[in-house]
Length: 539
Image (cartoon, rainbow, N blue to C red):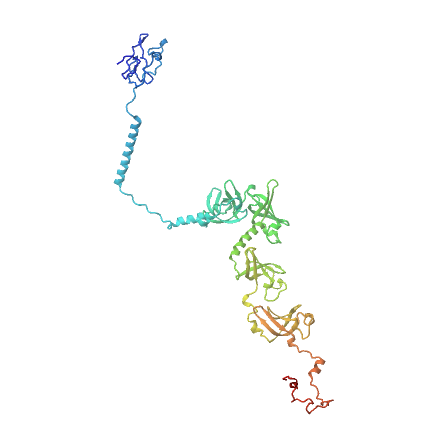
């Protein structure tokens, strides 16, 4: 084997002779870039290179490329060397893995303890499934009160209300008291709508769950609540901020004059014009002095001290609400009592208790009426029959006629055809004259039945109010028509010329003929042939 240091060999590299510098041993030069070093444990001990076999093809470091070993002794000036010093020995084993195994063992022990306790306690009793159909009565009552009379389907299907779908001011609603807190009373208006009113609006403290009629006076966007007022409340306003335009206040009448009523609201003087006191004309305003009236604020100016109220607006709103409720109850054919409020040429208006109906002049009586004042008077109580109702326009047609007393019932038996009747002429038309036969029953004498001769004008034969006797020609109970004839009861006048025609003619002797009648046969004869056979004709 060659001992040439440049030749490659698999034997370990022999250490180079030690270099002594400044009397201290120095580290041996490195054997190559892959050489590993082992740190010494003694202080001042040189670092020894670890011998390792070099692979084939590797060469030893060239003499000129060897690195100089760093001095291990103290540096000049007494400073310590630049080493990291002595490090503590590396702990044996893998600490993170041991810690994880210890935690897993602890978890396993806990699960085993839980399973052992579950086996010792035995199976748990089964929990009964609640029945949705069977709910306590108190729960049903609470749910019904929360819904406010609405079903869940109505609430779910109802679209969300936007700003355009909010409740209108001065609209009346039936609300339920949800809570009373301090000076505030909270109401549920149905669905998600809620409102608030002052506790001072009630004469007595209200109870949760009571149903109260309220009127919307505004909307608070910050709290998402409607400002409500209670009609007829003991106290609604206490300062100027409570008497905004459109709000309801309770006014105490302190005086009256020709222009209206003087009042006081929360210590502030106000005025109610004469046209806004009631729906009808008031003759004596002094009757209202000392009364308390619920009014609507139509003008509120704190700077000028003007406060104008209207009681008529409240009455009209109440009338409209009662009208809607009454229209839902009325049906054609019902009998109702009312008071005649106003008379017109075409009929009479009757108040049925919140809603007005019209009795047409033709429905006032079975007889013909020229003016409603002939049958009824203003302020008179009458019992009327509902004829028809128009829900869209709110018009109600009434009748004062009693259907049980219909005069045309059995009319064919009262006035048989061919009988002679007598009555006054009730009215005259161009085509004939009407004769009153009974209350509510009239017959017509056509112009062609007035006389035996041609009549150009009805007035030339009969006058209005004249008693005439006529004959019944036809009776139609369904159409309520009776045909009469005046000329059937009058003998026809006979003329002088007609009289001569009707008399028989006197017998006269026969006159002699100018030419005597021939008794013999004719010259031509009647039993001979025609003579055609002479010419070959067969005549």
